[in-house]
Length: 115
Length: 112
Image (cartoon, rainbow over all chains, first blue to last red; front, side, top):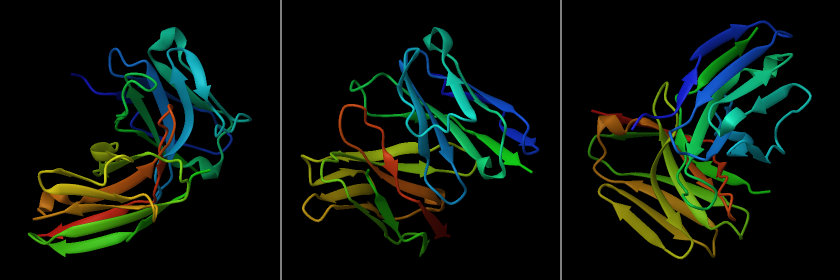
């Protein structure tokens, strides 16, 4: 079974630039999550999708972050404009569905450096 | 919201020793407690979890204990091996959405 795929693996940008991350979840997984992991901390949820609908985006900084999951499969997370404090690893995870499976499967992440 | 504290931040042991990582949580309604292992350059991987109706769970060299009254839970790794070296995260969640709140992580180093 293929795991969660993410790209790019690394990205370096200057502040005020924009950046986009892509995630392909495990086939058949209805729920998709984006997390931000700052160095030395645990992952923090940014947004959760169930199919192509948003379930929870309460911790997403909506003035600069946006995410979509068209057709309920792949997802993109965008930051525009980026700030220095956005430097982190952005993790995508998927699970079978709300309440049907507790386990989240994480991708390798995208390491973003904002200079 | 939920707050999860994890200790220690770094743990160094000799191969074959046991390692214990402890976490406390604040939300008494939390009922699901997963533990993740994160190796360098990889995403977290679930290694064991426990639900609030169980006090202890074991899987080979890994065990987790839960004390709901005190609101703390622990990860125990016996007979540690160098490949156990990684960052370990505890987490807690409640309700149907199962969004975990993570601790800050413990860097486990197993010296051969």
